[in-house]
Amino acid sequence: MNLLAVSINHRTAPVELRESLHLSQDEIKQMLKGLKDTLFSEGFIISTCNRTEIYGFPLNPHTNFNDLQKFLIDNKSVEGIGPTNFQNFFSCSAINHLFRVSAGIDSLFMGDNQILGQVKESFQLSEDIDFAGFLMKRVFDSAIKVGKRAKTETIISDGAITVSYAAVQLIEKIFSNLHRKSALVIGAGETGEIAAKHLRDKGIGALTITNRTLKKAEKLAETVHARIIPFQYFKEQLNDFDIVISATSAPELILSFNDVKMAMKKRNSASTCFMDIAVPRDIDPMISQLDNVFYHDIDSLKIIVEQNLKKRQAEVPKVESIVMEEMINLFSWYNSLEVTPTIKLLRQHFEDIRAEEVEKLKNKFTNEDIDKLDIVTKRIINKLLHHPTVELKKISEDGSGSQESVIRVNVIKSLFGLNENDNSSSSDNNGTDRENG
Image 1 (cartoon, helix red, strand yellow):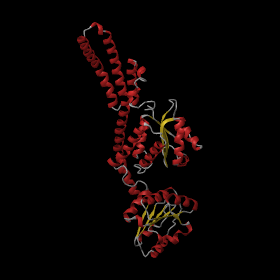
Image 2 (image 1 turned 90 degrees about the horizontal axis):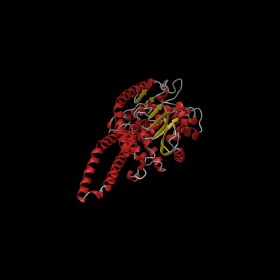
Image 3 (image 1 turned 90 degrees about the vertical axis):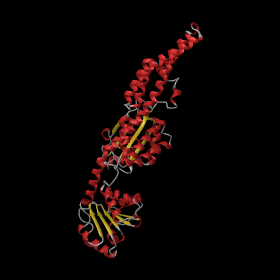
Image 4 (image 1 turned 180 degrees about the vertical axis):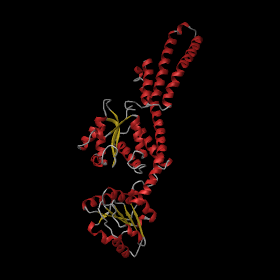
């Protein structure tokens, strides 16, 4: 299976480089059309905040990883990215990588809950422009199956493993219905952004963003459909919020004991949850002494994260077993595409020789003897082909590497001159012409 793939991801490049190659859906569609016209017969692109990857079956056997890297870099017109920022995959390794991505074990955050949906969207974009053929659709189905099995057969995605998500999960335990709650996120950096997105995904009733730099607050607010409070005024409105998550890079406290005490007085002591996920801390930890204040800082949240991460890491071998099982299934199916027609060609080849020789002797025997000769020669052919047929079937059943399978099949074709007959027998492939494989 000559599947090529290149990937720039959290292992190979810092965030600023990953951001420069991130693709919107419209950009993916345009790039898929470009790939379709020049490099691939079938292909797709995955692009998330932590990876951009191109997969495909080359139109030209000379197409290589450098071509794909150059295509991506040139289309985005970025500089400062080189071969060392990419991982390259071919055949089995490309499938293995895709399956690991779908299962969430190649993610920055182990067991990523969102990646399977993102992979599905990538597949759909390819199908929308008829860039997913017979072979790629089977790859798609297998990758999705891996992701679903990982979620249902293991606990790889259970529990929060980012501080931001741990904070939101803890908030859910404090307030059973977030749809009726209002939240303020202080800080529009990466940590605050993740927290805001998790609150949005959990259906928070009202979401507000504040940040020292108004432009960053506006950008995040637009992403999560939130309103904005100018940073210099947020303390005056602190009493309006049931939930406060603070994640700034301030060198000192931005919320004092008295700030929170005054806000709680205005709220008539209605319960309020404060999550301080900043380093150094943003909120005076003494507020935990106030009535109806639920307070947690990054240390207490990290304990939750570490416990969940250990649980997820313990599940990795189970997920890798699923990946291997589905790889075997996929390559067994793929190998059978080559093996089944070869068996048919081999048997037809011998049958043609047998029938030709019997036909030559037809006038030297009675009709009864010709019938007997026909039966005897067919039995001889069946016995001669029994072992080769069994060995060929083993290739498709044992899930061995495609390269070894192709070599063995091609040896048999060469020995008996079957390659010459491939074109005439192409109709036996049920429309599964192998120009991609």
